[in-house]
Image (tube, rainbow, N blue to C red; front, side, top):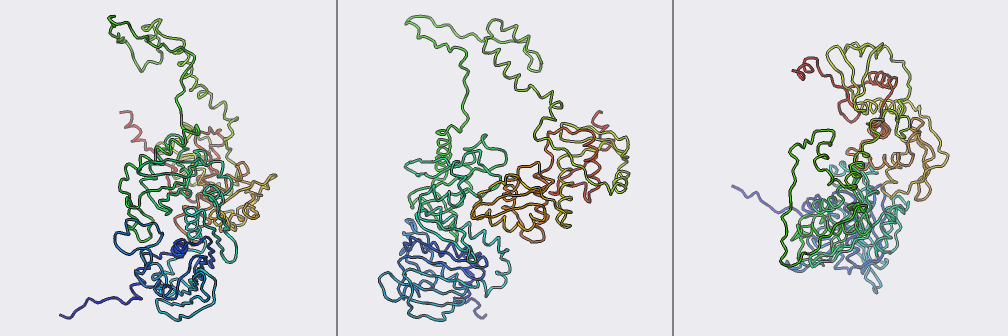
Length: 626
C-alpha cells in the first residue's frame, strides 16, 4: 500500500492557521496593533478602507525590526516573546504564538516597511499569499508600517461570508475599543475611508472611557479598587440607573489583556441583584492584576478566553468588590429601621440571680387566611405597641389606590389612546369575524386585568393580548408607511441631543435612510446627533429615548440583510410605541383595537411571532367547572 500521509505546503498550512487566527478584518487589526504595543509604541494610527476589505494599514512608532527580523516575522512559530515552554507561565506580552503575521500573509497582499531607531535605512517586504515578491532596503520612518490589502483574495469562500461593510466596521471599532481601554497610555487614531472615527490622546482610564463612550457616562462611573493576595481589581462600574438592555459596555482585562469570561460576568450581575431594572445589563470596566503563573492564556487562538487557577475564589472577590463599591456610594439597598419606638437593651443580671426562661406565646385560633386580624390582636392584648399599629397602617398604605385604578386612568401619563385609522377594509374585517362566529354590531367585550380582552365567540371564549394586538397593528402600519413613503414628520421645538459612541453612531448612519422614510429627521454635528423630527404617529413618545432604543435593539441584530432592515425598524418601532400592559381601555378603544387587528394581514401572531389570539372552546371551558 503506498504512503498517503504527507506534509502540507507552507501556503496551505498558513491558510488553515488563518482560519483560526484571522476570522475577519477586525482580527487583522487586533493582531497588528497588539504587535505594535509589544514593540513599545506610544502612538498607533489605523487606516481602514471599505471596512478592511480593500486596505488595513497600521502605523506605529515602536522600535522597528532589522532586515533579518522583518523576514523571520512572517515564518510560522517565529516569535521574540518566548524561548522555552516555561515562558508560557510568565507571559506579559500580547502576542507569543508566532502565527499572526504568517496567517495574515497567507490570505492577503501584505507590504511591510520598518526601520530600527537610529538606523539610516529600513526594510521593505512584499508578500502575496505567503509568496515573497520583493525584499529590499527602503528609506522609511522609524517604527513599523503594515499595509494589508485585499484580505481573503485567494479564498473566495471566506471573503463571500464576510458581512456588510457596516457590520465589519463595527467589529473593527469594537476591537479598537478593547485595545484602547486596555492601554489608555497609548495614543490611537482610527480612520475609515479618510474620515476620523477616533483620535485618542494618551490619557488615564477614566478619560479614555469617556472618550470612547461619550461624556454622559462620566457621571455614572463608580470606582472599584480591591487588593488581595490572589487578585487585584481596579476600574469602574456603572450605576444601576445607567444599565442598558443590550451588552456592549462590559469589559474584563487581565494583566493588560482583554478577555471574555461568562463566569465572572455572572459575579458582577449577581452583585447588582434586585437593584437593576428588569432585563438590563450594567456597564463595567474591570482590570485584574494576577500572577501570570496562575492563569492560562493559551487555550484559544485569539487569546480572548483565559483560564484561572482558582476561579471560584476570584468569583467571590469580584462580587464583593462590586458590592463594596456600590455600598460606598449608597447604591445598595439598606435596612430602614424604625426609630420611632425605643429599643430596650437588657441589663446584665447580678451574680446568683435566677434568670427566668423566656415564655413562648402561641395563638391556637390564628388563621392566616382571615382578612381581619381582630382575633389575633385580641389575644395579644396590650402587647401590641404603637409601632406595630403604625407598621400595619404602612403595609395597608402600600395597596391603597389600586381599587381606584379605573378612576385615574385619565391622569396616567402612560395612558395611550388607540388612534383612529382608515376603515377601508371594513368588509374584509366583517368576513374575518364571521369565520369565528363574531358580528361587529352589539358585540360585548371584557378587559381582564388590564392585559387581556375577552369576548364570546361561536365556539367558545376568545382571548386577545392587547399589547401584542397593538404591536401587530402598528407594525403593518409602519411597513405601509415605509413602502409607500407616506411618512409625516413631527418637528421638535427643542431638538434632543444624543452623545453616541462610534459604534452607535455608525449604526445610526446605516439606518438613516430608512429612518427618514419613517419620518425621523436627524442632524449630525461632529460627535453629537440631534433629533429634529420624529414620526407624527409617535409624537407622544420621548424622541431621544426612542432613537437610543432603536440603536440598542439593533446592536444584537442576528441577521444582516439590507432587505430586512425595513421590517426590523418597523418591528422595533411597534414594540417601542405599543400600548403597555396595565392600561385600562374604554369600550370604544377596545372596539377600535378589535376591528383594526382583524384587518391586519396576520392577526393571529405579533411581529415577533408570539400568539395574539387564542380561543378557549366551550367544551374546555365547561371542564373547568366539573
